[in-house]
Image (cartoon, rainbow, N blue to C red; front, side, top):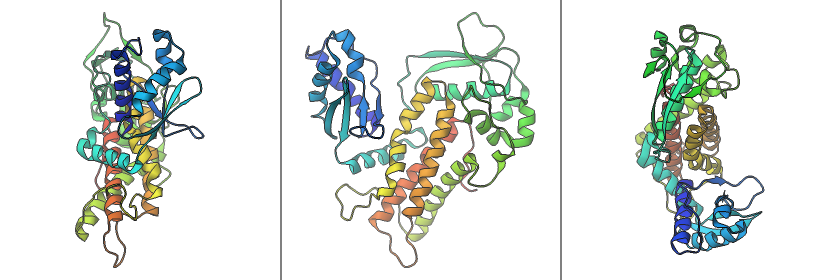
Length: 360
């Protein structure tokens, strides 16, 4: 069960409780589940009982008890606990089955993994100054929102800089608008688009403009061009390129990726894969949060974390056999994990408007 599936399961439990008249409260449009923080209970937690307590005129603990008995019976949910003032904590059953679900979702959805329709009812018009960081940020935020089903357009205070096109930025209109607008005003870059393109090129410039939170100054120095681990953009793109190289290498050795079924002995789900699998499972939630909070920097940091976990996994659990070693179920599963990581990285970079080369 993926986090998105768990969210839908909890929402279904709320609807059932309302339909059965066990709970008298409006059914929310969505339910947010989050990975449990260190020291917490279970795999995921949800505060929906606290959210519904007021409208239902019941203590949050009572609402939690009503929902717990309905969620606990669902396939894939091993245990549901009530913690604190009314939080629901979920322990998923058969974690490898959940991992297989994540890998299958990435394979099926490809670059669109993590996209959805949670914001389908929202319409936005983003308005920004004639400044390169504002323009790039507005466009990236718009991409994130569209990926979650929202609609809208972007406008600029004045005629756009012609160099913005080389950064992949377009605007739908410019000038004063009579309708309410959402202003996008990050800390200015301190350079024009033309200057950044000349020094950095489009990809490094976009990464530098988007990597920092809007209220922080963007780092736009020559370090963005360094071909080494110290450069996060290089590390993310290199992780993607390495994942693609593994697929090519496996083909030469005559095998392909395949996520092994749960219970196979010895298990091909290496413990070292856990951080990477967890990050990939969390990816849809990060994209949705980035859209809701107008924060493409969250996506950039998520990609950095995925790349770091990918290399740790790759070094500890090589997806390709060495020497005379024959490809095994473990190798096929490791390759499936590596390929999924590459897809997640490619999809995230694409949302940020950054090219994703197959080779570096």
